[in-house]
Length: 607
Image (cartoon, rainbow, N blue to C red; front, side, top):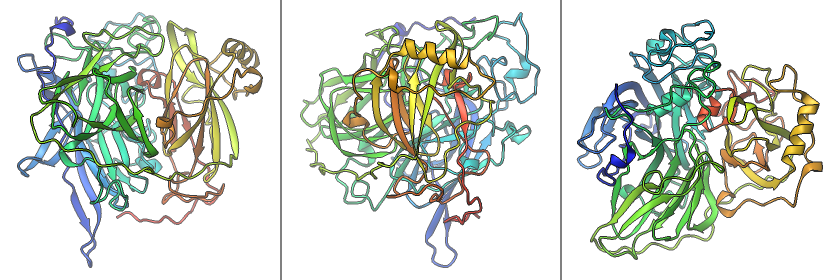
C-alpha cells in the first residue's frame, strides 16, 4: 500500500513552471469573403500520467484534456497534446467558438465516489445503506463509468452550452444525464475581454474530477480594446502568463491523495466538507520556479483549489498592480502588496521585476488560514510557499505608463428586486451533513427566477463560521457592500420562522435591516469591477448587484432580452458555493431566467 508523501521531502523550485500551450483551432470561414467567422475545436478528456512532482519522483495519474496545439518555440503542430491543466483557449471577442467535448475516460474514477450525496449516478444505483465498505474498493457501480460535463466559468453562455451539472455524459455518450442536450458547445465570446477558465461540473463529482486535473484557461481578447490591441503597452506573448494555483496531497507512488473517510462516515462514507492539501501546485507542477527577465510581467492568477484561499505576497514585500477581476479590466489600476483570492476567482496583475538585480530569487508566499478565515495557518515551509521567481541577467526593460482609466463600467443604479438568501450548515458545524443555500436542497423547486433585463440585489447572509466564494453562472455582477450583522440573533429568528433545514416549503424571508451593525463597507478598489465569484465572509451580509443582461449594455429594460441567445431555454443555470466540496453536497441551486418573449430573434446562427 502506498504511504502519504511527506511534503517536506519534495525539493522546491526544481520544477520549471509549465505554461500550457494554446489550442490550435480549425478555422470556420465565410465561403465568399474567406473571413474567419468562427473557430472549431475537438477536445478529448482522458486519463494519463504526468510529471507533477520533480524528476526522480514517480509520475502522477491525472485526468486532462487533449487536442492539437502548436509548439510555441518551434511552431510545430502537435496533433494530440495531453496536459493538466489543459491547453489554453485563446478566443477573440465577437468570433464564436464551437467545442466538441469528448469523454474518453474508459477506466474507473481513482478517487472515492460517495453515492450517498446527490450525484450524477450513471448506473442508477440505489441509495446504499450502512455499513459502508471502505475505499478502496468503495462501490463498483459508483466508480465507473465516469460522467463529465464542462463549464466555462465566467462565460456569457447559452444554457445548453453552460455545463449544467445534470447535463453530464459518460464515455461514448452511452449514458447521459437528465438535462443532457449536446456535447458540442457554442461560446459566443460577446463579453468583455478577460481571463476565464473551464473545468468539470458534473453533479456531485466536481471535486473529484477537478482534483484529478480537469481545468484549464480560456483567455478572451478584444483587438479593438486599447489594452488588448496591437498597440497595447501591456506585457504580451511570453510575458503574459496564466497561473493556476491548486493545493494537492500525494502518496509516495506519485498518485494523488484525496480523503476517502467522511466526517460522518455512517451517513456519508467518503464526503468531507473541505479538502486542505499539504503541497502547492502551479500549472500542474509542484512548487515551480519561473525565470523572468528584468521587466514587467502580466500574471493571470486563478485559484483553482477545492477549498483553500490564498493571501499572496512576494517575499520582499514588493508591490504589484491589479488591472482586472473575474469579468474584465478594472476601472483603474490598483496597487497592492497582498491579494486574497478564493476558489474560482481570477486576478489580472502586473509585476515589475525591472528594479531587481540579476540572480534575485523571490518567493510568492501565502499566509491565509485554511479553511478561511478561522482554520489553521499555512506551514511556512510548505503551503506557505507558492512558487519562486528568479531574475535573469538580461537587458532591463522599464514598464510603460498605464492609462489612468482602464475601463468604463455601466452604472447599475436602478434595482428592480432585492433577494435575501442565506448560507447555512446542516448538523454539527464541525462535522456537517451538508451546507445549503437558503435552506433548500438542489432538487427543491426553483426559487430564483430573475426576469431577463432586470437588475437584482442579492443580500447573501452568511450564517456559517467560514467564508464562501459564491458564483453565479451566465452573468458578471458588481459588489455593492459588506456589512456586519447580529448573526446569532438573525440565525435564531430565521430558524424560528422557517424551521430546521432542509425545508419542504419555500423559504420565508427575514428582513436584515433590524440586525445590521455599523455601516456598509464599500468595495475595495481591487474588487470594484465585474465579478462572477465573490468572497462572502462569516458575520457579514454581502450584497451583490446582478443584472441579467450582457455586460456592455448601457441600459437594460426588464423583460427585454439583449443577450444574443435565449437565456430562458433549458436546462437553465446555477448558482453555488465554489468550495467544490460544498457545491457537491447541496450547496448549489438551479436558477431560471424568465423571458416573456421566449421566441427571441438571436443575433447569431449556428451551423
